[in-house]
Amino acid sequence: MNSKKTITKEMLAADLSALGLRSGDWVAVHSSLRSIGWVEGGPPGVIEALRSVVGPSGGIMMPLFVKPGGIRIDLALTPTYLGLLPETFRKYPGVVRSAHPTHSVGILGPGGREIAEAHRHAGYLNPGSPYDQLARLGGKVLHIGCNWNSSSILHLAEVLAEVPYVHVAYPEWSRGVSGRHTDGSIISDVPRYVPGDSAGFYLIQEEMERRGMLRAGKVGEADSVLALAARMLEVGTELLRADPGRFLCHAADCVVCPVGRGIINKLERSRGEKA
Ligand SMILES: [Zn+2]
Image (cartoon, rainbow, N blue to C red; front, top):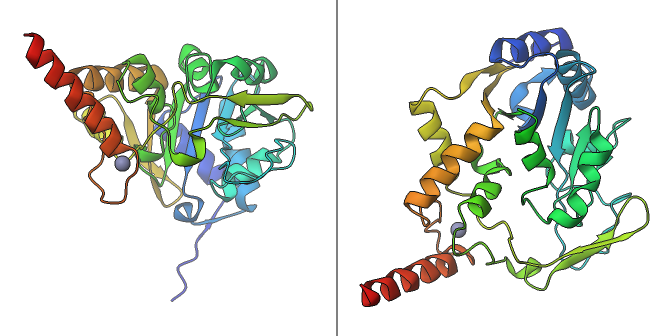
């Protein structure tokens, strides 16, 4: 079977425009590269297609996260574990990496250096981090061939909603993280507001789909979704305020969600005793 249709950059750009991406937009991209199909120019071709649509006044962000497990993190060298497109983006000319040891974001666009530097004291995915700045810029979030369980910005909704488990860290993050930034300075963070499990974030996607707040279509062969970052935060925060345990998973091997649920249950019991 030979079903390898070549997808050109121009075809990708047309798909992105049809999805609602515009010149001057800032966009955070989460992707399953394989799902797009056979792209002319490979991963750089996808980045070039994105650039051709947002233009010189727009910008692109991709997560360049690193796991701390026993490695010496050097943001000038350490690759991201998030796949070939973000890793290609990390090395792409003009991309700056934001100042966080494990949750850095690659940024390409005007003012990118300032956005990247503000991450130094903001922490993980908190207010002031690149995704927060994306929302303030009126930016969009694009998922190509993956659902919103990979949507890093929704961890910011957990911080904004002040969920009681927001300090519960995975073991690798529990003692804080540090590393060397691209400028040689040492950057570090502690688990005060730390991202937990994201296995329930697809529920925000479903809710926004019900409310007609996202655009769905194809990018190449990949089912893709585009939404406004600020709307994602609003809806995510609203759902979490109504039910803080809404996005916690029930997987037997999850090490953070049962802790989070325990905290919520304890709070509810103490409220019940006071009432
Ligand atoms: Zn979980």
